[in-house]
Length: 138
Length: 138
Length: 80
Length: 80
Picture 1 (cartoon, rainbow over the protein chains, first blue to last red):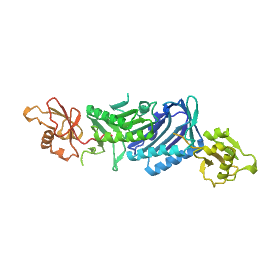
Picture 2 (tube, helix red, strand yellow):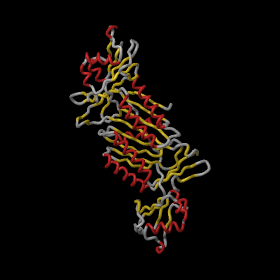
Picture 3 (cartoon, chains in turn cyan, orange, green, brown):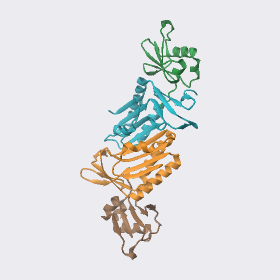
Picture 4 (cartoon, rainbow over the protein chains, first blue to last red):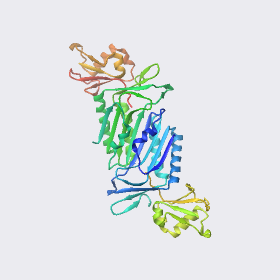
């Protein structure tokens, strides 16, 4: 399997290299997004993620296909978490595996940037006294 | 410890996120270099790495310090393997952890590029009938 | 016709799913659906963007809707 | 004065360490050391670069060498 696309309750960061490993690859680039404790000086208690799962998986597959074609990748992983995540917990992991490092760096950046733009996943920031859907309003 | 700099016999790719995890980080970018099976259409049996250890660790620390200062990183890892490595085995892992993803991507690229330029580590490609020190000759 | 709501859209309508049971009242296109939504829930006007998915694909305003389609309201996404 | 050799430099001189025991023959600077090396092992001329480290830091040609320094010949590096 060239592509791993998943929505999970908990992200296991330890297994991504096994998934991206390939005899034709000299470079693997991985990005992990984690929950920061402070956003605009306000303390975050947790992030809550929800998704339109069928559509999200389709959009993630499209991103993987586009990246494979553009950068001639050997393997791609896109995995997002749903549910409530505490500070420092991983919420997303994306990675690309290619013959040389230029391709995997560029592809990995594309994976996370495009995921944030098109994949139907929504994040609510939970503060002490309020909750806010991120990016909902201008 | 903000910096992890190591030369090891075997790289454990599974633990790098624990090392780079930080409450002030929203992004972690990791690059892993692995042994490709073919280089210029020739089949590689193994790569053999040797190092001038004391100097290599010093140079790796300088790279980490420079990156932390330039990109305001929360954590940095630079770890290189020595000895003989077979196809698909990891030989180097570098990573950066920062508040936002721009910084960790740029820093991670800087870490591996600079490591390859300045750190006294030497790689011999072992083919079926010959061995070659990589990049030694013009 | 069944419409799914996610994220802030779910909060605005107070439900994750609305059934348009009245055949007469069904919007014929994505544009008409958006217009109906905004009329009934003006809060949608305040969102940065408002997209619609038909059968789990982003759909332009001129896409026509049928009773068997799975329709979803997609407020600004914020994954990652 | 002790000089360490790594990678292809070790192969060229056939040893990972050479002791300059004759006080008279000791090169006084990095430049002089490189010149001596190339004279004795012309293969060094064929390398892409040839650097010298003194006390595990890269050293310019004009750095002077003392008997207590740890000196190393650094052929083109190829880590990663």
